[in-house]
Image 1 (cartoon, rainbow, N blue to C red):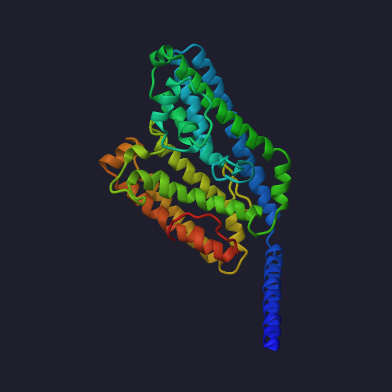
Image 2: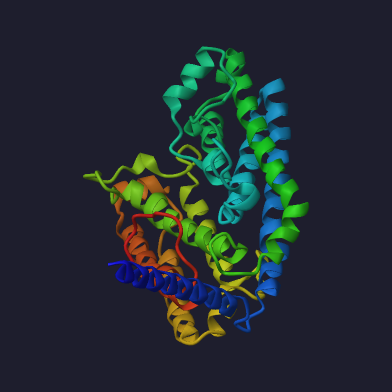
Length: 366
């Protein structure tokens, strides 16, 4: 019996050693597969991520200036300027929300930047309750009563007369914009500081590496467009029995379709490693072209991106997205379908070929 136990122990040790050896070998292979991931990460950091957060920071600063000017002395001209500043800030956010990791990631009770400033639909009931109660703390987990969609509600759903009649509404709007600025400033500052070096030097493909974090947020951002920005108002989420057009992003400004298109462009830019102005560097496309089977996937993916763009171009710019879902949602349904077709390319096939694990739970099919 003792010999059997000893033999079993030896076998277990050998298996464990083999697993460790294989894992180390796999990691070593990933670290030395011939593709220059550091240059790829530098391209992302220098030409996509840092410019995205720098522009968002600038637009949010302009939003704060416009908010302060309007709330100090509300009039129609200042309200128009405020709406323009909001539109520019939200448009800029569409290029920054694929980088919900590192400085923009979760920490303690703080969620990622996308959840903190981009949660929708706005909880208008709780916003009004806080305004009535003189509560401008914006704390806790109530992210749906702050952030950009709260601004969308406050700016587009009320008139100059409403603000002149309600000092508390002015204070609430100021508090929301100030909090957005504080959060965006913090993320931009860290990318301009030590995190930049940390990001470009973390060149592995293991969980926690810069490539893995970037890839996972790229996938999560893509699925958010399909499942939430389209699927939610189309009524395709679990438990929905019919379309719910009022659950579009940026409901009150009527700019949901514009932001949706910008978001899709920004996410595809991540795949290409392409800057906002169209300069393509090393990105996931180049990475795929360097591995066995990758060039075929690149061809398939680019064909589907082209098809998605074709379908987008068939969607009328007017009326608003929520109205199109109500009146004639076939073009929107077609976009949802074409986005779904690229899930397999972006998610399971890419993950397999590059050896990068999906580490978030999406509940989405391939």
